[in-house]
Length: 117
Length: 119
Image 1: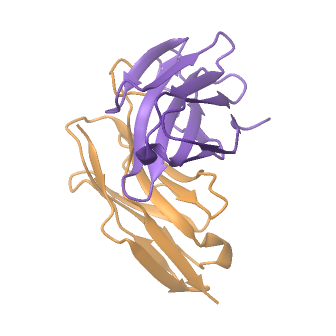
Image 2: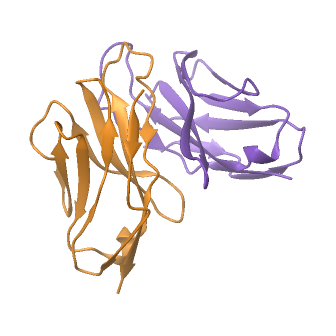
């Protein structure tokens, strides 16, 4: 069974540009969540998508957005990049069937390392 | 809002010895999951062990076990017979088990503990 796949693995952008990151969840997983990891702030929740709808959002500015497609694949977009957006962006997938509680475990991808110059 | 605190930024252990990583959390919920995740230098986050709050029995997975104290809101990880491959950053994490809540899909992480294993 394939794991969570994130692309691209590495990318370099300049301030003001925008970036789109992609995440393919484990087959059958309908919940996808995104996290930003930096040395200073640690791991911070960005948002979660389930059934193509954003269910939760962390405390990030509107420049950070995402979406989920009907096949559960997700993308996140960061517009007007700032130096502080340099981070490892992690995607995680999990089983979530509406209001039925699953095992709770999240499965992570290897991440996309974004460097903003 | 839930918070998770790991008070040990770094820990070290000799190969074959035992080490305990500490974690405390704060929540007003009664039903939740707690996790320990491991992040080796290759970066992929891997689940080490999971504990459901409604279960009183401490979870164990081979050399890994937890000491879950619900009243004290404490969730420590014990690694027995430490191996070189255990060296990594370890994160304690919390997740609500209430699927109807707005925080359901969110993992709240501690700051992490870097574990070094000496041969």
